[in-house]
Amino acid sequence: QVQLVESGGGLVQAGGSLRLSCAASGSFFSINAMGWYRQAPGKQRELVASITSAGITNYADSVKSRFTISRDNAKNTVYLQMNSLEPEDTAVYYCNAQIYYTRTYSRNGWGQGTQVTVSS
Image 1 (cartoon, one colour):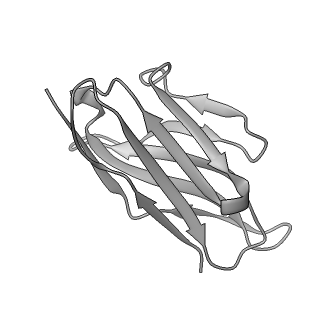
Image 2 (spheres, one colour; image 1 turned 60 degrees about the vertical axis):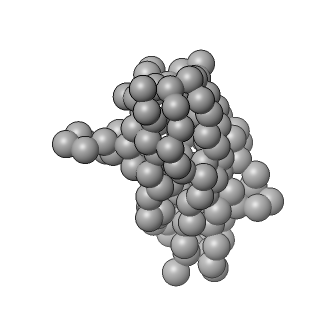
């Protein structure tokens, strides 16, 4: 069983910054895409940013130019640097990863979520 453990959430004022981390641990063959999703109260979970194992990134329009996703493949860790935070960024942020247990068998994994609260 692979675990995705997130850290780095918290309370910050508008305009501030936070850095989220998510580390994968356990037994697996490899990890392909990793990403961050968020879910605000009363809203659906949405993709914030994703990154492939080759480093190709994708961002939601609402966070482009403010957030940066990166990963350290040697540490099986993905990061989300969040700058110029806005109250609308308040949500529970979830780490996601496509985990390969063999060369051909994969499953989608989720972290437990970390709360990000941006005060105005």
